[in-house]
Amino acid sequence: MPRKSWSEKLKDSKGLPVVEEITDKRSKRWGTGTVVIPAPMEVNEIMSRVPKGKVITINEIRSALAKKHGATIGCPITTGIFAWIAANAAEEEKTKGKKTIPYWRTLKVGGVINEKYPGGVEGQKRLLEREGHTVVQKGKKYVVADYERSLAKL
Image: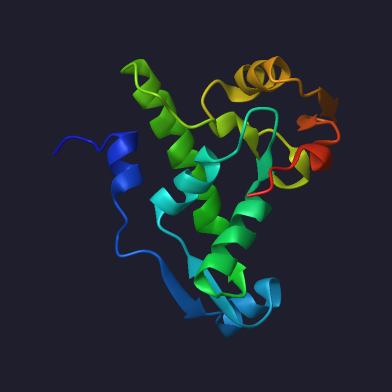
């Protein structure tokens, strides 16, 4: 069986989203309440709404998903994975000449550029700087300077 494309992975919701109780095992890390495990397309949809000159972090996406589903938190693991899938699907669609989402505007916690996105740090740094952001190196990581001022209001 051939491997699924990034776009196919993005569209495969696997019965998601689901909201479930935070179990004892995870409560030490996440607290109590409920967690929403989003569908990949929900993460993609939020990423697609970040306008030029603005950025969003995975934590803002998680908060928006939690609010949408009436959950305490958005799952940090699946949200990050689905953002990565969305970024790769966007790059795949771009090679077909299709309009894609601006995945490079989605940052990790603390405004850090996600080195796992297509183009790596250098590619995203170039795209972010083209949109007026300043990218600085902090240790081994690259961060959008004053990213808080550029957070998208979605």
